[in-house]
Length: 402
Image (tube, rainbow, N blue to C red):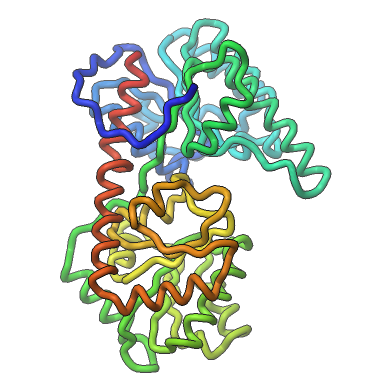
C-alpha cells in the first residue's frame, strides 16, 4: 500500500548519503514551468542538507554559473537515444541515485517517449536506485482516437518506469492510486509527496498597501471595497467558467475589482472587453509577473477565485500559492477535489460547476469580515503545516537517504 496523508516533519536525525543524486527533469530555469521551479527549489534544498545534487536537463537550461560548477548539466538534448546513451554512461560511472521528475508530456516525442522509459529501466537494472516523482501520470482515456492511443502508450510508460523504481511518489493521492493500479508485482513503495508553492511570500506591508491603492485607484468607477483575484495561465479549460463567474458577480456587485494575474491575463481582459464590455472597467490584468510581483499582487486580494473544472487538488500550483499567502479559495468541487480543502475550512465551493451558487457564497463571505479573516488564517496555517518547502525537503531527504 502507499503512504498517504499529510505529515509533519520528522525530528529524527538523517544521515545523508555521500553518493550523488541525479535529478532528471524535462525543464529547468530559465525555462518557466511548475516542474522547473520545483526542481530548482528542491535541488537547492537538498544541497543544504549535504547532498551532492546533479541536475540533468535538456539544452538551453540552467545559468552559466550552475553549468560551470557542474551542478546543472543540460546534456539530455532532445531526449533521444543518441542523447541518453552518453548521459547514462556518466551516471553509471559516477553511481548514486536517480530522482526522476515525471510528466509524460515533458520528455519529447509527442508525449510518447517509450525509449526514454526503457533507458530509465536499463539504469535501474544496472544497479542505479531510481526514485520516481510523478507530477502527472498519464492522459485520461477520452477524446480523439489519437489522444486515446497516447493515453495507452503513457500507461505502458508509467508501468515500465514503475518496474525500475525503488520508490514512486505522486503529487496527489489520486495519482498514488493510479500508480498502485499500474505497478508490477512486487510493487515499489508508493507514497504521497505534496508539492510546494514556487511563489515565496514577499514581506513588505507598505509595498502591498501601496500596490492595493494603485490597483483600486486605477478603476474609473470609484474605489471598490474588495479585490477578487485569479491566478492562472488562462487556458481554455478555465476561461469559460471564469467569465461566467465574473459576469455573475458583477451583476450583483459592480463595485468589486477583479485582479487577473499570470500569462494570458492581458489577452483574457481583451476578450472580456469585446464580449462583456461593461465588466472590463472592473478588471485589472497584470500580464506575466516575476515571483516577487506575484506575491505582492496575491497579498492585495481578499479572496482567490480559482474555478477549476475538475476540482482542486494538491497539484494545483495556483491554489497552493493562494493559501501560502493566507487567501481563501473559491472553487468547484469535482472528481479531483481532495477532502482537506473542505475539512480544513480554507475554501468555499459549489458542486457540479454551479456558477450561481459559487458566486453567491463569494459575496456572502466578502460581507463577513471575521469569517474571511478566519479562513485566511486557516489557509496560511494549512500551508505551513503540510506544504511548506522545508517539510517537503525533509521528506525527500528521508527518501534519498534510505
